[in-house]
Structure formats: structure tokens, C-alpha cells
Length: 424
Image (cartoon, rainbow, N blue to C red; front, side):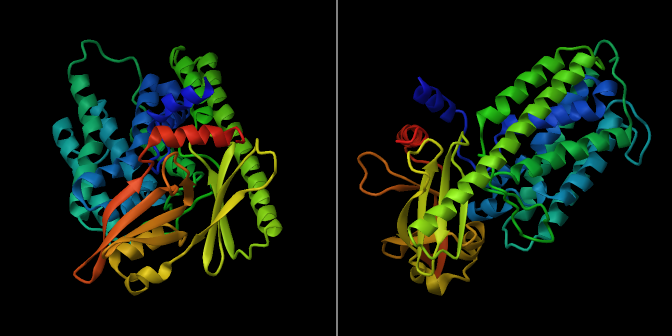
């Protein structure tokens, strides 16, 4: 029953490198309720949820640019502190105008205000993204796609307000009130993402430093489910009531406590990795660990030595308190002459240097991201890496042909995942 339940969940939670959308919607809605719930009622929850998804609109880069550019763009400028500070100023003013507010520089006519808001979003995204250090192609197209998606939400609400038969009883908290809500709803998104193994670039466009605390999976039902239940219960209460506030805060406190528990588990798992390296006499220069998908029980670890990596897993249910590590040759010499090629350079940055290389054909290579480990697949001779990239030499330069983010055979991998979680 347990295995079947997780397999069902796997069809809804992808292994994409982002905290799942439902979690971010829930967090944004809860933050919106804290900031403006007493004044704006469910509007605060709705706009908090919308703003909580704005950073992940950067996935639209997948549709308008090459795979490596979209890989580098995800969790970059839209997940930065700068984005969280600048965008709420224009978004707050636009929503204030849609609900009838007249203060601020935008045009009084709501249609023109929407156009001005979109231009503000586009300019912010284009300028901020252009200042990013990494070489990303198609920034104009990316900024256009993301800004259009951003302004689509205010447009829908505007059309709904036009069709409203009775005026709303909710207050319009003003330009700065809405900006305050959007700041916290957007900022908490990358802060939560920073808790995952993928990390996020909080300091773009000034630095490509990826903040990754590695304490929680990119999708963890034990974090999201109680939080969502409490939020739904809060939304059904009267605006400003104690019950509404208590339910909302209960969700925030429970999820935060679980995150704290995961931090404690991370520290314990990290000590197990260090103990493993000492026991196996592996002269590692550095190592990284993180939870596997959908849980905080099974942990993936990778250690680096001068010529090899050692990668494996440890479950809290394992009989022996050590990681089960396997040696993986680096083979960096296969791409030694291409380390400065644009695609290879970005992939080296993306993997934080934890990568191995395999030659799989004539001028064809596979670069494996070892931070997320590999899984033994029944019937296959070799294990499969969760994240890998296929590169081909074209005109004397290695270029990425394929980006694999997640398992090819999900049911087989999740079946094996359940076994390992249970210590088998």
C-alpha cells in the first residue's frame, strides 16, 4: 500500500528542479493572509498564491530558448532578492489601480494601467536578466514570455471586476499595502527553494552564487499536505476572525517545524557521510548530501577525491548507519579541451563541479550530475543518473543535445526508491 501510494504521488510530483508549485501556492497564500487578510479577506490569499508562483514563471524560458539557457535561467533573476524588491512596486500599484485606487503614477484608466504594468515587468526582467553573468541566449524572448504571463493574472482579475454585479466588501489596502504583500509572497518563494538541494541564485544579477541548504526535497508531501489543509480551513472562516488566523498560523508553524526537523535530520545524515568516509578511508576533499524525492528518510550523498567520486545513499532505516558508496570515475579528461565551451562551462557551474563524463558515441558524450545520484534499474546493465546531459561536438565545440531532468523509467525508479527508503 505504501509503495502504491508513493507511485501515485510520483505521477503528480515531477523531479523538476523546483519546489513543487502546490507548495509555493500554499506558502504564498498563507503569507498573503498574514499580511493583508484582515483588510482584503480572501483577496489576500488569492494574490499571495499568485505572487508565490511568479518566480517559477521562468520555466517559460524552455519554450523560447535553448535547453542550457533555460537551465541557467531557472532560479536565477526571478528568484533573487532584487526581483522580490522591484516587482512588488509595480505589481502593487497595478492591483491597487484595478481595485479602484487612484494614488500613484500609473494611468487612471485600467486598460492603460495594465499596459504600463506589463512594460514595467518586461523592462525589469530584461534589464535584470541582461546583467546576469552567465551567457544566456534569447533574453528578450524570455522577458517577453515571462512578463506576458505575469500581466495575465491582473488582466483576468480586471475582467472579473468588470463583470461583478455587486461591489466587494473587501478593502483596498492601497499601493504600499499590496506591495508589502507581494514582497513577502515573492521573497519567501526563493527562501524556501534555497532549502532544497537545487538551491537558488538569491543574489542575481550581481552573483551566480547558488544558495543551497539541502535540507528538504524539491517535493515533500509531509511539508505541503498539513500546510494546505490548514490554509483551506482558514479560508472558510470569517475574515479577521480568530479561527481564521489560528488555522493559518497553524499551517505556517507546522510546516516550519517540519523544516526544522528536516534540518536536524540533515545534520545527522551529514555526520553519517563523514563517518562513512572515515570508515572506508576515502580521502575526500569535499562532499554533498541531500534528501531524495518525496521524503526526508533516504539521503543521497556524493564525495569527491582527486581522481574519482563516491556516490550512494543512506536510509534512516538501514541496519548499518553508513552510506553505501560506489566509486565513479571522473573522466574529466574526455572534455578537457572543451571546459571553456559555453555549454560545458554552464554545466560545470550548474553541477557545482560534481560531474562525471562518459563517451557514448562518436563525438558524443554524457555529462552526469552526481549530486542527485544514480539508481539501479532492474533489467539494465548500468545504473541511471537522475540528471544528465548529452553533448555532441559541433564545429569544434561541445553543445548540449539533450537535458535529462528526472528518470526515464519512473515506475522502476520509484519502486526501487521505496525499497531503499525502507532500508532494503
